[in-house]
Length: 401
Image (cartoon, rainbow, N blue to C red; front, side):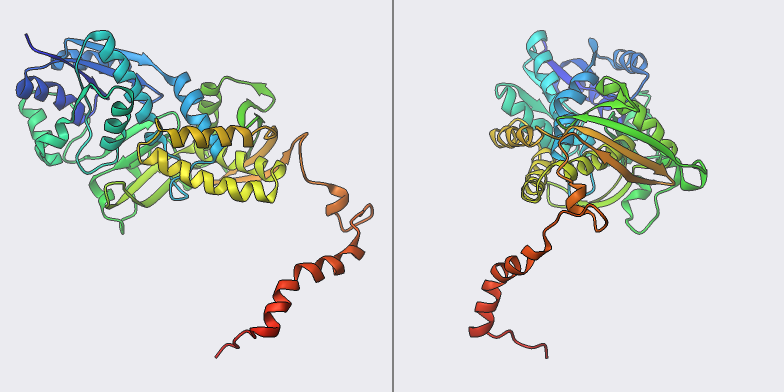
């Protein structure tokens, strides 16, 4: 009697080939698990393809709400951007999929879980480490990491075994999509000097095709969570989808990034993240209004560390939970409305307001109504500059040569 394995299944090249390969190599009965976190809309076709290839059972789980509520929005509250550019869409989806894999394996009585990651990418680490944190007794198999085939060889294997896959040697892109973003790699994108071909983009219009007039949206936040769009309260999934469509229409959210992978190599990555781009910028603008300078500075450090933890596959760790507790505390007064202008690839903050705003017009204005006591400034400057004057008397600054 052969063992059962639960395979994280996207319907793409590597996971489609993996169904056949796991049966041939390990004599495993394969159960596929497809997590719906806002990627491919034709989920029934993906499920049927898994069965046609040889899976004994094909499961599809609607995890969009969990993804947004428990993974995306906590990262948004943190302002998590890896290396200041990547909003971590794929990286946020992996721990959720790992969690679903573990739950399914326990329910189905499987002792093995599998995924389609290669041996040189980040996702293998995210899956393996997350699964180890949640269920260390499970064995993990990564077929693409074991078979060590090139992409062309994998395509040839699929053709040899009559496995339908979306990738061809003419269009070899590897794509991952969810509600928070879309990542594209391989093919022509591996040359960092070459401009990304038009066909890699699916969610965002080129600037030449965007509307000639801007759009304005008002995003309402409560404790750092977006809850409304133009005064209409929306659930998280719907709100993200609405902003995604509008921002993509204006060409917002294209990212071309040479990033440092966890495994030690540089990789040219292209992303589309319309909703993430708008919401992250709006959230930061509201924080600028309600948090002190010291809070903002420290939170930026936390955001960088938090983003690294997500990118490096360490979601289910004590440190991530500790940082999340700080972030939750920092969001107590991040409530208000941000007005955003969308136009020709740009997301511009044009207004913000909050009942907890630290902006005081009477202190900020230079016109009538100014209550700032300028007579206090000389004394402040005297005390503030005391260390500088003390050092200058005994340690004169070296003049430039």
